[in-house]
Length: 191
Ligand code: 5GP
Image 1 (cartoon, rainbow, N blue to C red):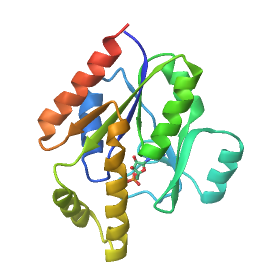
Image 2: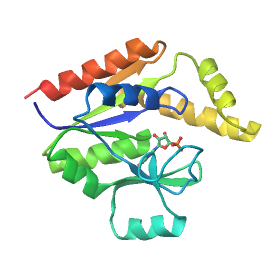
Image 3: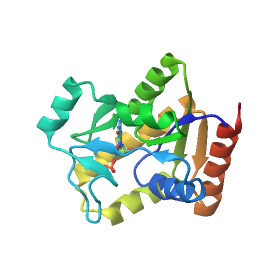
């Protein structure tokens, strides 16, 4: 067994969250990192579970303090991964970061450079862009402009898949979850 930093990305609406939940049920030994964000909590999101919610000023202070392994400004909000959490937890078990590709590459770079832990990048893709748009439309009250920005963002994120170690097509939830678990099992079982 080895401790691996898994970076899981995919456009919002691709079903990342559900797949990761399925993975965590099967592999409760993994640590799912909780990010810090300046965006407002969505209904049902609890402090310290979905995210640590902070103000922009607080986030910027933390950037200056070097708190983050990586951070990014995404849809006008900051999102960041706490370095101390990842360092502490990687000593004990594998760690999952559910983050977008720019931050993912930064985190991967830094951890690989330190040379102590393996990094595995996994991209989750939606079955079709049309299906993705449907899901996003159902989810919220997005304006046409916001939808256009999202579409560009999705195209950008999917274009990063070739730099990922694995890509999982999420057209069937059960199959995709099984695939994710198999990848994690395989990678953590290496010496
Ligand atoms: P949401 O606002 O829908 O929860 O997340 C928006 C995007 O931010 C998602 O693509 C999510 O993976 C990404 N994200 C969440 N936490 C982090 C983080 O700590 N760092 C980076 N770079 N992206 C994050």
